[in-house]
Length: 106
Image 1 (cartoon, one colour):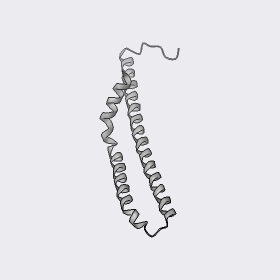
Image 2 (cartoon, rainbow, N blue to C red):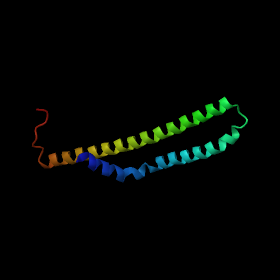
Image 3 (cartoon, rainbow, N blue to C red):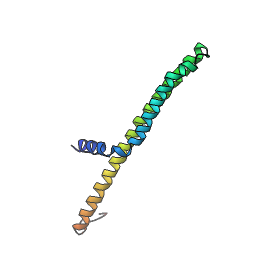
Image 4 (cartoon, helix red, strand yellow):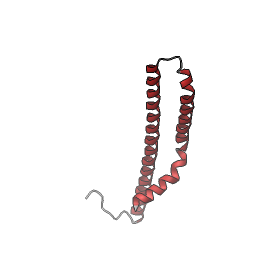
């Protein structure tokens, strides 16, 4: 019902935030390219240092993925907040057109 409606509307709004996702994807691509080129630059390092750096790169990629997911969730929540604000505004207008007959604070 309502959640499905919000889900559809959220998908329509996402172009505004796609730049952030696009930047994240560009970072991931750059990270992947860096991963391919870095093992060559790791050649002078000892085995433990190479493993350490590879683990750190993996952690970085995981962190970037989490950031991307959280940005997407923030975008969705912002959109839901906008929808709720519009609904409140719509209901307030309807209340005013009814002459404000509903008692307040009683």
